[in-house]
Length: 141
Image 1 (tube, rainbow, N blue to C red):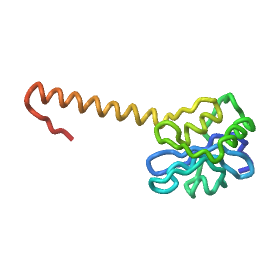
Image 2 (cartoon, helix red, strand yellow; image 1 turned 180 degrees about the horizontal axis):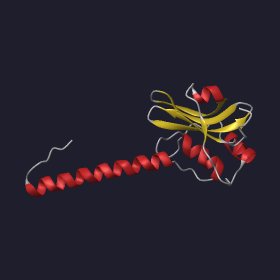
Image 3 (cartoon, one colour; image 1 turned 135 degrees about the vertical axis):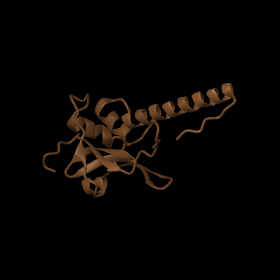
Image 4 (cartoon, rainbow, N blue to C red; image 1 turned 30 degrees about the horizontal axis):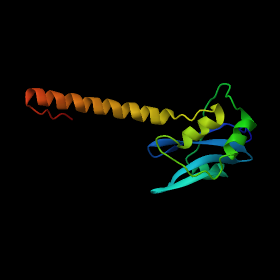
């Protein structure tokens, strides 16, 4: 833990996604609690590294020259402590950490999910159009 620098972008695996947090120093992580309990949002909070990782380990996401390095990123994160406006698609834990480091809330996970959903929708539209044109519905795995 002594190798971790304040402002490090931490990630830890969860079921079906990767959770993000910002290392604040002294064994503390600031993160968006998100859906802490089923169907109940949690606020941005500062927790121990152990609470953040939940026994699943963690890794540092490499970053080249963030706009707000180290203490500046931690200050930005602390300015939002207690915020409770979690939105899975537009204001999640990854959006939060990216905002702390770069000034822009982005989520590569959300972008990948949207791309995947769009591809599935396009295939379904193509199949529906084919079925309508031929009068035959195809069933494929």
